[in-house]
Image (cartoon, rainbow, N blue to C red):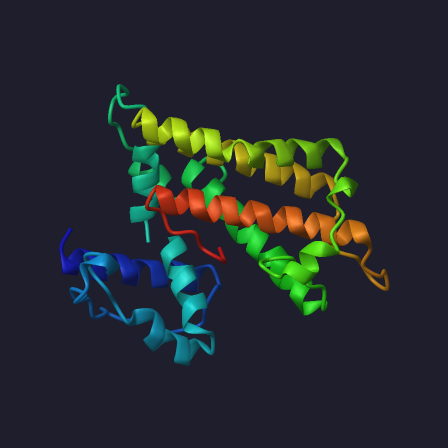
Length: 237
């Protein structure tokens, strides 16, 4: 892939984001793409998100997340890495570019974005999520997570160490991809069944804090799992 290819992909992502109503900007004819000085930051870099953020009136990181969720490279990489080593290397580029539940790359990243959204909503309501705050953690009663969907998600989270060990030992990253897909399903089932945030004039309860901790744990595992596969974990989609 050349810098021109990357520039075209970014412009296409901007066009899609504008068409979806995600941002309101004029679609540029092209964008600048360069080689970063530090190779750890990837093969190419662009200031497109920073330049568009001012026009859109949105934070640069938010615009970058939107464009990354629409740029098809990560989706294509995920669809390849989820295949067992002995499977035919066929790639459905049309599916990779589509943000639909049938696209496994979309489903896992969407689950991560949804956990981020829920935690942002909690913060807007003044409800602290646990995160790395020891004081908040001390006040959470995880014994309240006794429902079947909560238990299913807890068990899925607990499988991460063994999955990572097996994937590394057997050189089988597809095992980690399969795990993340199953975790995404478990999270969606939990979210559809268990109301996390209070509604209307309701006050937060101890169960609210426990469920938010479960959401935060899911976010961390999804983000770390995608990172290990070299896939970007968007905070918004």
